[in-house]
Length: 341
Image 1: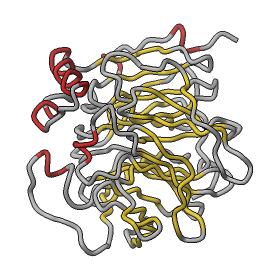
Image 2 (image 1 turned 90 degrees about the vertical axis):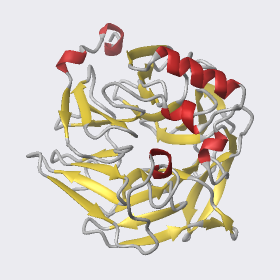
Image 3 (image 1 turned 90 degrees about the horizontal axis):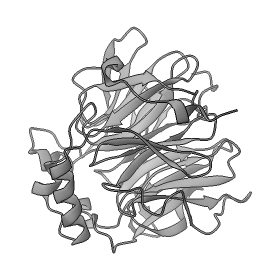
Image 4 (image 1 turned 180 degrees about the horizontal axis):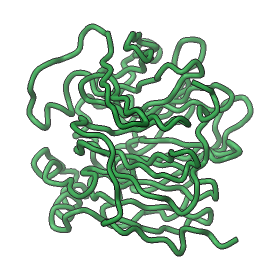
């Protein structure tokens, strides 16, 4: 069978949108009944029901910041739900990029902290959380630097991956360049890693005892100009879809590792300016926040949903709604797809 993505392109005029007034819908979870759950910068998630009705569920946790903030401060201070995953019982696991901890929230908002340190040391910038079929919980730490913007440089491989075991985190792999989203393939043989400042996707073999093998690059060693991969997700053919956040690109890697770019929404001059600053280890707020435009500004994630898993939703850091389109092939079901919640 010929790979369906090879003959696919996206007509932007046919894109549809769901949600309104969202705040930083970075990560999106889809359920079989058509519900969507999007991370929300107000401190929790926004539930979008199949009929389109919205409800923002904020976490009942102390220590959250309130009030109006500058654009940069919104990404640096207070609670900032980032990656999401469903626990087996239907609760929502939240990797909080603002509070630097892994949290769990019921669908009514009751929340608690699962972990915020490793061996007594601060955990760092908790970016993403993934639950696999064996109910193992994996998280990514992008960097140990508190102000993550200072970690947007080529020479800082301080990201790592940890597992939540016996109510604590244990590091299972380290040395990544701004570890972002992670996914497993259909057989859970490999863990795939988006390395944002590495400009590539890497992978590690998953052993039966939960340890990981050596890191290897999957696909091109660089995903090209403006290569800042963020969110990734597999389809059922084995293609790995993904986004490049500051250059606003949607791409997919075939099982053979060949790169296909379907959307390029970035402003060429502003992406150029950021790339030059990046390679000089001189990224600042001005050059960074000048980027981000198009259908999903600061394109951050891809999620397959719909009754046949063939609707692809795009999450973003600056957008206030969620674009979606009909994918050429169904997505790989997430572990929660048949949990029945």
